[in-house]
Amino acid sequence: MERVMGGVVPLVLGGLGLVLLYRLLQRLQQGATIQDTVVVITGASSGLGRECARVFHAAKARLVLCGRDRARLQDIVQELTAADSQRQMYTPCMVIFDLSDTAEMVAMAAKEILSCYGHVDVLINNAGISHRGNILETHISVQRDVMDTNYFGPIALTQALLPSMVRRRSGHVVVISSIQGKIAIPYRSAYAASKHATQAYFDCLRAEMERYNIQVTVVSPGYIRTNLSLNAVTWDGSKYGVLDKTTALGREPKDVAQEVLKAVRHRSKEVLLAGPLPTLAVYIRTLCPALFFKVMASRARKEQKSKDE
Image (cartoon, rainbow, N blue to C red; front, side):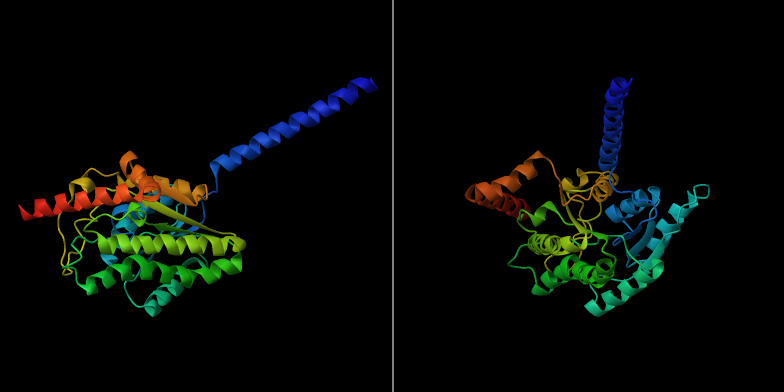
């Protein structure tokens, strides 16, 4: 009997160990829970930001929606709460401010954000503008305006919220960059430059924040079917007002929003959401820059020719 029990006990313990290991692996695959987390989304009134609001709200996060247009933010809040009467969701908070404002104004907005729930679990830096125009004609003031919105605004908000994350030894900072943060496309100088700067800053942030258990994710999409090109600024600061064909054929914002949710759940460090050719271009730029430069020069000539005709 003792021999039998001596053989059974290790088998039972081994079986329990396998079950526990299996459950642990399942949890790791599922990633972090989003329910009840405080998620801040900038540029939440339209495009990808609006879809992120829908996706994270459906995951039962406590949302703080940020943007410049109070009426449009109220629209998305009403939309989200109207569908939730039976689901006991959180009513999103709104904070109205412009990322291109001074760092002091952005810091004040950060205090208002923190006053909503007392802390921030996830910051999604999504707001941004694009640019269309050749370098010879583009005013330096336009270059500065794009940098203020796409680079200085997000880092000012991030740095204003970081101390509270550091104190809690917890937090996740996400930035919606672009594949143009990795490769530069002609006639997008201000936009590409702002996204290159964004990539570098958040790469540094990731390394510095690791010891505080703060996650940093850079999401680099290709074209998304939003109004980004319509609202892009041209060489003199006026609106471009054209829906580019590449944008019209881009990814659906709701699909990209789901990828952002997945990145937060799995604490991904970097997510590249582009087709085969743009992804290949990223590697060519690194491994064979001379070829990449030739391709981009050819693209510039073709684009200029089409504008001249």
